[in-house]
Amino acid sequence: MSHPSPNHSLASLQARHGARYRWLLLLSVMVGTMASVMSSTIVNVAIPDMSHHFALGQERAQWVTSGFMAAMTVSMLTTPWLLARFGYRHTYSGCMWLLLAGGMVGGFAQHFPLVLLARVAEGLAAGVVQPIPAIIILRAFDVREQGRASGIFGTGVVLAPALGPSIGGLLVDAFGWRSIFFMVVPFCLISLWLARRYVPTTAPGGAEVDPDAVLDWRGLLLASAGTLCLLNGLVDLSRGNQTSAWLLLAGGAVALLAFTVLQRHMLHRWRHASGIAPLMNLSLFANRRFVMGSIVSFIYGTTLFGSTYLLPVYMQMGLGMSASLVGVIMLPAGLVLAVAITVVGRLVDRHQTHHLVSTGMALLAASFALMMTVNGHPHTTMVVLLVVWASLGRIGLGFIVPSLNVGAMRGLHRADIPQGASVINFLRMLGGAAGVSLCGIVLEWRLAVHGENRPAAFDDTFLFLAAVCALALLAAWRLRDAPAQGR
Image 1 (cartoon, rainbow, N blue to C red):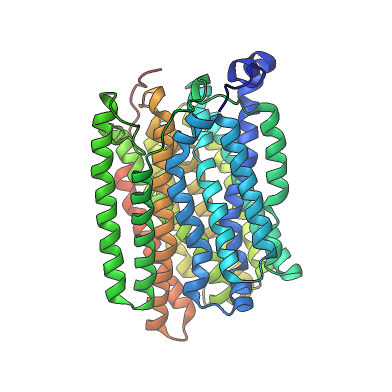
Image 2: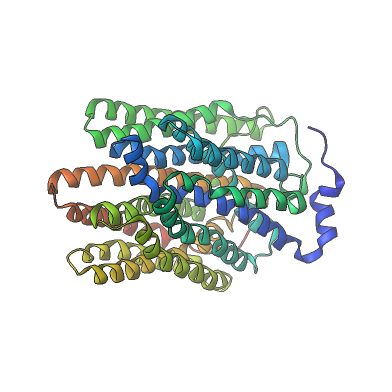
């Protein structure tokens, strides 16, 4: 690849736009991230309608979400290499084109395998994009502005899943499930226009792209194999295929163990300038706060994506509500989340992050547990309770979203920030991919136990999420602030 044009390098764009440039850059990547987040969550509203159209069982329909999550999880590990090899603009724009293509193909697809392929393409694009904003916030903003930037960015990003299900529910009722896929198109087009104006062609830190950078393909294959075996094993568990499930889970564990050994070996060689950079820099885990943040991120991903899958299905299958009503119920919670992130973002710069993250996890656990009180009331009361408990959980997320990345990575050296953002997001998405499958497993198990009493089966599944979420409090409390290094 040729060297980037000086007119579009980081230094040139900073000189052209002045002090406001960092905010323009954040806005540019925020729009694309909104598109990727929307594509990851909005399809849940369409799952019942899509299942009916293609005559899918619960397990196959679940792969519309799980396939996306698996692709997004693995591709996150490639973000540091892609940024070093191609620079911000080419990496970001390429992902937006892939996301756009996935939305168009999925919307026009006549067969379920093509829908699933489109979802995988969208997941690959979304995975690469999502660590980029954290890299920009931690590198381009002063430590006293990072919380505010995280809050503003988080507010914009959560508006996508906040408004998405509401608009999506109306679209599904009016035009069918295909309309869901087309919702990302305008966001992708706007993000491509913004990228041409404000996203630099240079790599992180203003460095020129390195055309000789080599991707750790062995690590990527092992990570992919481990993730896919893990997810397929969990799906087989839900189907009762015990033998194949445990073989896949064991294979996933072996692949991930081999991945860890390989990364340790490559890190040693890389430090002595005799090998390529590892896909995951394991030396980051020498930082205690990063380790605690990684644990919280994994469990937070499990509960967040598990509940994002479970809640719309619960309201439609368990309580018999329409897709449009589900969207209306979830809208206030999304707006509450946007306000909470804005407020808490300003607190991050003045308060210890472990207090904020712990508060968020406690509220999230409480919201899941309180979902058990919804069933059995008159319809209007159920709607009110769903809005209140969902809003309580979103307030919890408002404490977590702007605090977790900043708290976990403030102690890292600047050169390690791209890897740190990639690893944190990878673990969050690995937890998310597992969470969707685990919710499906627990739900199928409890449906078998309760029979026709579907609401009781959903209650048990929400209680499972509350228990898992409460575990993260132990790690969140150890996410204590320390003086920043390498700044």
